Length: 322
Image (cartoon, rainbow, N blue to C red; front, side, top):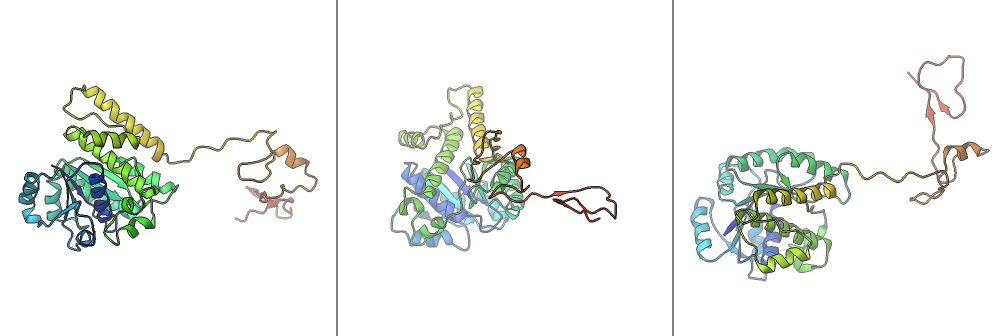
């Protein structure tokens, strides 16, 4: 049985919502039976599961001080995956939960507060020598800060190449015990969750063993390249090369801090991509009125340096105040 622990010192990072979505997606992809464990005193995941009509994934009520015995019981009962939700506070109890993890998932919103808060969680995972991945959660579509946050987190660990964007349907789907994949399977949010689980499953495969035929087919359908498992017949060099390819693709798609440059217009081009007329400097000087074409803002230049007090600024220039 493999164990995934979702941990983050920052409250509101989306651990509970992500725990439920990953558990349901894992069942759908054939990684079950899956057991959910809620160690958060607020018991939000417990309330969601009680409102759920489907019986899978299962829910295990296990106290933190009995976690070792409880996990052994689940393993003997035939469960193949356990997903544990943790409270936001960093305590000795959270450190104990992380000690049982095969993989620690740290969701983080692209904000300075979340980035500052991940340090304590990273320390706990490193203290127990547990592999971890960051998941960018509740990101704004096409926001530059998302890429900048991913670059910052990549200095401390692996960032999942799938970003979960901020959409209301994530929270709305949890009202009656369902997930977005069950409410609207064709939505962009459902696709993001499917791709994220395929990536996490591949990480677990690389660490722990083989992938089921159904999981391989689902991963191929999502366009995610499976990683070679450790301990397989593949040479170590090939394993490292495959991982580097995945990281490179992720960096090109999500970690670019600046957008690609716009194509430069030549003297013969007159129509810009944003819809108004665009002229070069020579055509502007030929304009008898000396004003820019319709739709273009007035461009004023600033004169730097000292100016003679009795000399008025030239037309089109702005006097610099010192």
